[in-house]
Image 1 (tube, rainbow, N blue to C red):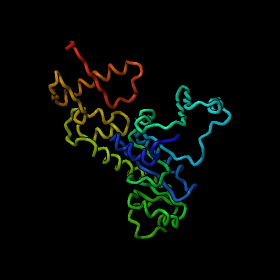
Image 2: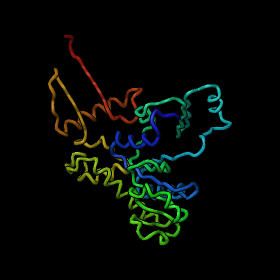
Image 3: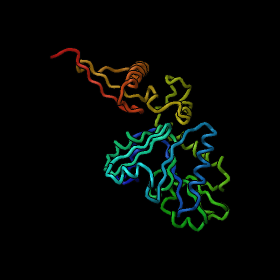
Image 4: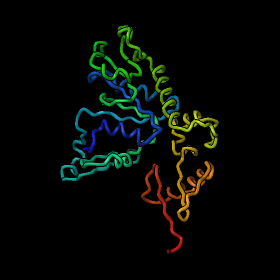
Length: 275
């Protein structure tokens, strides 16, 4: 897949475009340090706690479908191939695609997103996986975003390292850190008014519902942006009418063909009479 911007820029802009996502990276100085092994344990522990996750993983090698019918279509010259089974979808393309289109094509419902690799991405908390403490020298530039270091012998790490240190067995403590970060990240994207209009007693309870996949940011009545003009005059709505109008529209739109599964923005213009 070719992008008009780098994948690093795509990931960085994605969180900015879609608030309500907690993105945590798992990185290492080299291949084979145990990133995937650690990542699968983290995902499993999050699932046990009722939290849903999405994974974005860097692939070192070309993504192949060798010997399959899809490879025959690729060789024949197909620019885009979509593989669909009863419960999975695969997407391959060689075209240049705008970032906004990528986000629409790859809707990520989960609000905890774990990114394995891409250590040059800046700004996101990082879990650093080390096979040997000496490998830390090659990761000096990412230390300010360090959430935790995971290695076989944390006691051998330099004393001046201030981020948390864990072994590969300390999954529960590490996941505690991930959950705490995710709650604080998403809480910062909410109004923080604890109004109760969403049906939850506090924004924090609503955040837990988001992390469990029960709610999403667009379900916050106060956060909801509704702009109505009648004959050019702006009509202001309080949170409850906003929520009622949005629920009716979403219910109607979901019955229509071609409407994306995730609805982030709707523009409607109705003219009742000719001028």
